[in-house]
Length: 358
Image (cartoon, helix red, strand yellow):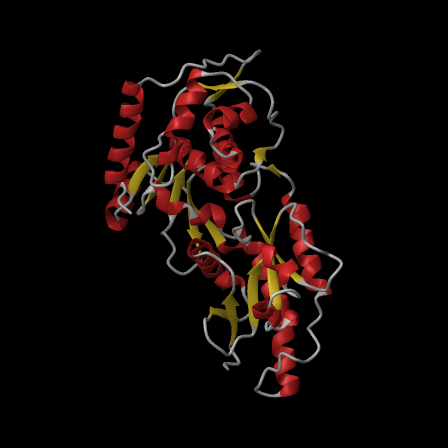
């Protein structure tokens, strides 16, 4: 067992959930004291399990075989975590994707405990010994939970940096310091554009990563010739800053409704945002309904069958860039989509799928 790494085994997660955890762990890597490796075979230092398995730990033999003091349970905001036990909890968002900051804080605390235990006990980690102190680890998760709140606050995170950039001059250069970074983002506030070597939908890590991993430098007195030369040298593509802000809010909201928004107040979509993005193709039906009807967001969910968390993400993004108008009363057209419109939506989805193959 390496003294420089901690071995983590995932138990009870779907393949999709495992991929999410692996991605978040990669993003968190720069902030961790030691490297955490996902393993499937012994030796294992810690086990990460979904909250649903916590109540079954003393009931099923295969779960009884796991050392309880080495188990970490994932829990979402407002989850049913049993704080009466000494279990360790990792805070996740509403989609059960671990929060990067919580992962860094918790894993670093556990890492220190594990390394101390190794120094005291020798090279072999004995899982039958007394558990490491969990009080501070649980407190760190609870602090992160309290900080997250129940609303999306646009002035925080990378979205907040972009909103604050409106009053700045020069060329703002943002860099995400993680492995496999999508590249730098060059923001020119005066022209309301940004430049990037990657397409817009590949910049999502800027909005989901720990903001401490993002650095910003400013270049003053940048001319049109400088921008052109930079674009050619680094193969940069120009985009509107508005599109980056829309996508950033959509990715950052994580199911939370925008602070100050009234979920029951009727709203209407003025016009569609650009949905020609790989992870926005399922929003076509939502955009069509919200442009044709004035309704509260829960009503939108009831009428369309679209999850309310996704509706919150979409609404927040459109509200921030001025695509939402408030209505004095609900105005809902209950007509079913005729076959021609259904066929049109199918064609649009097909074209988007071809433009963004899996």
